[in-house]
Length: 328
Image (cartoon, rainbow, N blue to C red; front, side, top):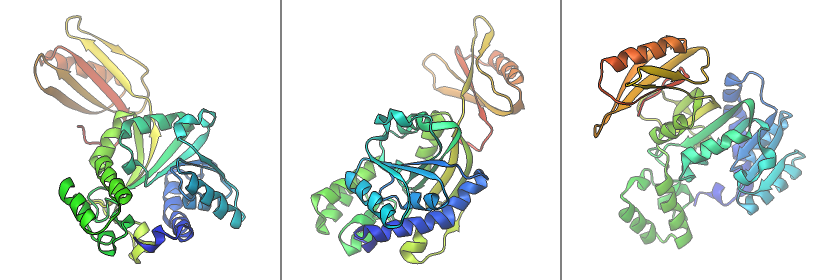
């Protein structure tokens, strides 16, 4: 096990430095006025929140691990910082709903199986106009399986070991002398892993809009872990993903081919992306990307025109604020 994972105060300080140096400037780029009500879900010892507290933000940390929450309270008190820390499942805390202008989800979503359900639930805690900051290690990165928590020095520093087939990976962990709880945790992470494509699918299925995103070939944490300077990498092989997202309303149009009519609900203005798809009887999903248009009426008209040229019995058109997206 790498030393920082047994020395939690050191881990707290490292998180605080990384957040101050990299994450807060990134969030400021998206939100020039730093949000004052900040919630972190899965806060651990609270290192990420400490830097926000030093800037005068009101910070709240929630984690299901009572031991981590106790350490967060201790570390904040020792440094004269103020923060609220709660040991609970976030979705049981209804009194916190609609309160926070910024929610941090840092190195958490890769541990969650139902990512879409988690993201959908987070919306309840956002204040109007609020944003969510999400950062996670992509599954394909060298230590994307969190093998750094292993007790074996070889396993904890062995890159890409987690990409082995599950039976072989489990066998290697056992042969290296890892105890059963550690093996269980590492295998669970393999099950709940978060490739960027999987994250994007969950993100868009729950109606979020990407405000900004940054891919890293060498992520910011590696500066404190290994002395490596972070390298952003907008190419094909990212190892870490950070983004700021906001909740948006998904607008739909549906039309019946028999009636030749369409129904438009809750349109929002601005530049929109439309996707039209139909499911034929016993056929595969068919879709047509209609590109960018201003105004939902024009898109609806084009959807109907597209419908006339095809033989799909049922149509839906989905709108969202324009952003780079891979339709899946």
